Amino acid sequence: MSLRHAVLGVLSSMPMSGYDMQRYFDEAGYFWPASHAQVYQELRKMEREGFIEATVAPRGTKAEKRIYNLTESGHRELQLMTLQPYAYPPERDGMRLQFMYLDLVPFEVAREHLRAHISHYRLAIQHLQGRMDGITHRRSSLLRSRLEHRPEDAHDAIVEYRVHALAAHVARAEAEIAWAERGLDLVERLEERRTAGTAAGAKVRRLRRDR
Amino acid sequence: MSLRHAVLGVLSSMPMSGYDMQRYFDEAGYFWPASHAQVYQELRKMEREGFIEATVAPRGTKAEKRIYNLTESGHRELQLMTLQPYAYPPERDGMRLQFMYLDLVPFEVAREHLRAHISHYRLAIQHLQGRMDGITHRRSSLLRSRLEHRPEDAHDAIVEYRVHALAAHVARAEAEIAWAERGLDLVERLEERRTAGTAAGAKVRRLRRDR
DNA sequence: TTACTCATGTAAGTAGTTACATGATTCC
DNA sequence: GGAATCATGTAACTACTTACATGAGTAA
Image: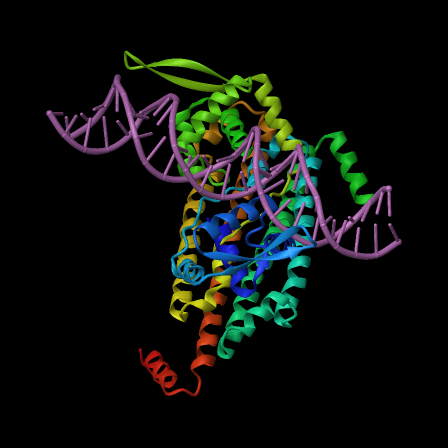
């Protein structure tokens, strides 16, 4: 249901084609990424329901391009969705699920999983920080277009709510990294305990220390 | 695809009926909750594929009850899934999406959303801590059953990986609460700035101070 | 002319939700 | 006798993914 929220949101900032919207979701669609297949279908559906309308622009000589715009009803719908208390959906986390059964695999595999976790969220933080920078300095064209048609005294709120939303993702990513690092320590401790006293264990520990 | 991982996981600890499994997912299925409709279908499918098999127990005089067990192939599949690097799916977050457009609603609504966010994650932490306690003190029957048929020197790892997986959810919940609290401060600042200098604003501030 | 980006769609399949449906057992 | 719980399913629908399909414009 929330792809709709995302679509209403971007169109409330700027009229846009399906193609552009999908591109936006790709590069800055934290919160609600979507494939072009889904975007085009949702746009047609929302058009039928009267939330958005398209102005058809020519593309070359034969083809066409549809630029979507919010209708009055679309504006109302966005406001309604923003007013309503958020219904928290059940959370699923495959990584954690996998982590539950790590005792079935060698310690080194556990470590690799955790290192991958750290890389994943480090990369996410980089993207997010670039994005936050673009918002705070009002470089994002979507943001600028939104500011243009909203009252001046709302500009601060618009910018800062967006920054704070992105900050949530950063905070989450940082928590994930910290957790994975504690996880690496845990694996180390478990391995040490397991190999304690055995000749092979002593050797591994020597190698590790000398590396 | 990961409901399968969850099913293999619980069955690797203890044979179970679809009904019991759904109950487990309901009360302790952090990571991968599922409805009974989905569980029964997935069990039938996995049975056809040879990962699990059912022993049919009578239920009263007429009805039947199917207790599922992992097959050799099921065990291998679980290990394989645990070995494979985790493919991070696109993350969607409706709450953050809603938060992006909070400038469309009154400050008080923004505050309500954030307070609900805090309550939501506080409750989650309570559940998780109860669960973690049950694991560390080895009270969970699923855990105990798993420990019984795994080698003694793996017991620590089994317990601690599980605790650490739950700790991830707690850490995440704490990050969410901290973020929402910073959000409440932000709303406060924005409102102050907005109403600064206006008579209405001064009145609101007076009321707030005297309350 | 070839490769790339712009641009829009459909089809088939998987995953998950909600509602509908049935019947046994157990406890009050 | 009635309510709660145990127990298993199906049907319809929504959301999302992956693959297939087509064609225009542009720059090397």
